[in-house]
Length: 168
Image (cartoon, rainbow, N blue to C red; front, top):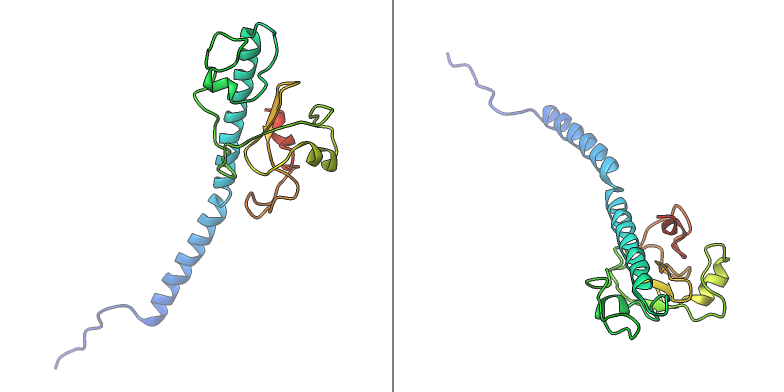
């Protein structure tokens, strides 16, 4: 008499394995879900430090001891009061919006991190990229308060101004 050989898995065994894999994948996704935002913040932090260092180097080499009139003067060597030096290879790309646009602050008073949201928004136009005030040499991430925050995610602090990044 021949015995029947049971080869393979039963339906219950397969369901148990699928449930275990689902639980493990949920744990992994929860653990590394915020890694993208943290990476972008680290990149933004590095970009701001580089630009701010370049602004100070420009001012130190400037005959008038001023910051550049436009941020592009850091990399294209066209400023009249420095010896055609370039202080940046290029304007970095904003890691959240993937833009390198620079918006000049043209308001009567300079940018100030203590400004209210409405005052900040009246000083900075556009969205994404950078905001630059040549009077005080301040550059910040340009997150206008009217921007769709689904692009940058839920902001733990006021990212319409880049206030969180001004301390770096």
